[in-house]
Length: 79
Image (cartoon, rainbow, N blue to C red; front, side, top):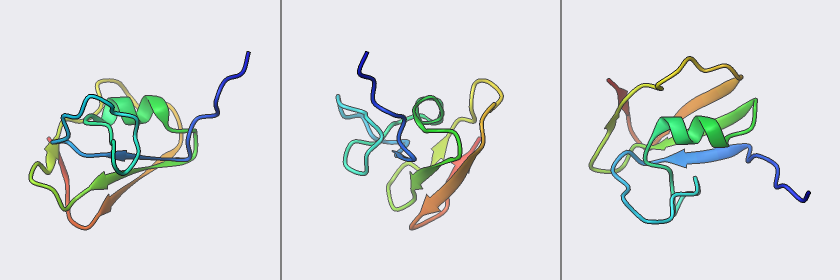
């Protein structure tokens, strides 16, 4: 089977409501859970901090792989 490797970097924008949420800068995920599921172990989840909705919910389950969280152009809140 030809499966694509998990990306080393994915993007999250809590206010994004586009139909195609694939974790890219232009089509980010809207939830941290989708980002955690998609990113490679040791990868980076980047949050867009220059948008209207800066608050999201924490992950539903414990994070069981190494990853780094970064906020880009602002501060985000996990509440």
